[in-house]
Amino acid sequence: MGVLVSGASVAGPVVAYWLARRGVEVTVVERAPALRKTGGHAVDLFRPAMDIAERMGVLPRVLERATGTDRMTVHSPGARPVDLDLHRFFGTLSDRHVEIMRDDLSEVFFDATRGDVEYVFGDSITSISPEGEVTFERGAPRRFDVVVGADGLHSNVRRLVFGEVPEHFVGAYLAVQSLPRRFGRDNHTTCYLRPGKTAAVYTANHLPDARAVFLFRGERLDYHYRDTARQKELLREAFADVPEVGPWLEQDGAFYFDSITQLRLDTWSRDRVTLVGDAAYCPGPAVGGSTSLAVVGAYVLANELAQALAGHRSDRGDERGLAEAFAAYEREIGDYVRRSRAFALTAARRLIPSTNRDVWLLRNAGRLLTRLPSPLGRALMKANGGSLRLHDDVEIKQYPELVGQD
Image (cartoon, rainbow, N blue to C red; front, side, top):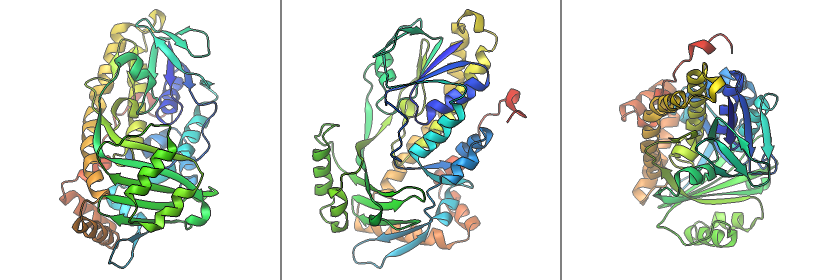
């Protein structure tokens, strides 16, 4: 059985790792000419995803590449700055947590697979037939038993197989800007809160530069996704009352801007094609724990697929076996996906406060949680309905045939 994975960021290499470990031939195609090395933005891994990284044997490298950011200072109008202990804060959300730059995480997963997986950079899929015939922009056509779309929120594979699907806008935008390191402080995040907007700057231990992140509420805005000048103009308008961020937007470093949207597909699979991670069920960039969800989804998909098809490699995967594997995958993480969507909506409301009262509540809730003993903070989170401890409540299916082989 041969599997083609589109996308070499996070979910793609995790799928490839577990399939290759089961003896499946895997090819990963990535549009970018090489693995991205710009650092990306910081992402969070919570307990389930860290458990999977541990099973892959890469957790030490993940921890080694952690950003090291452990303090945050929050500034808001008319109030003294609030200093927060981020270790304590995240300890109330999850028993295991690490913050790492997305591109660093991608590199860790890539390195774990490069010896067992064929990687093709600088190419992209142009068509997929129901029988698994795949054509590419540059490479020769090939045939695969399964195609996995792990190519992000704006997935090319999803568009080819499912057509245009609605993206549910949650009423907010995200931007990330690379800055000279002098704008940040070592091991520290500096955050500015205003009604309807949040901006922060942070560093990572091993990176030569800093990152600024912007979150703001708004209606649908008119811009082209390649028009960086227009996107920065929109940010200047949105953050006109936060003078501290003006110099950030004058820098020429890597820049990212997008709406915060969710995907709510009824199914992630069709014929020999399935989707994983943000390509299938993005709960909302920066607010929904999408990286942890992508790692868990990739792990479950690969193991369900390999398990269902173990006895069918001679007849191109057996379409009934594929359907069963895809159904099991969707069933196994469906609840996690639905809860992640709800979590993202809650997180967006809290991280981007609407009113001065909400700003005050966010500042003081953060201060309270970081001053409480961790067990008490966790208990308070659970008493609040438990939604903010979503990731620790997730139980990952164990695959018995892999136990003892880690």
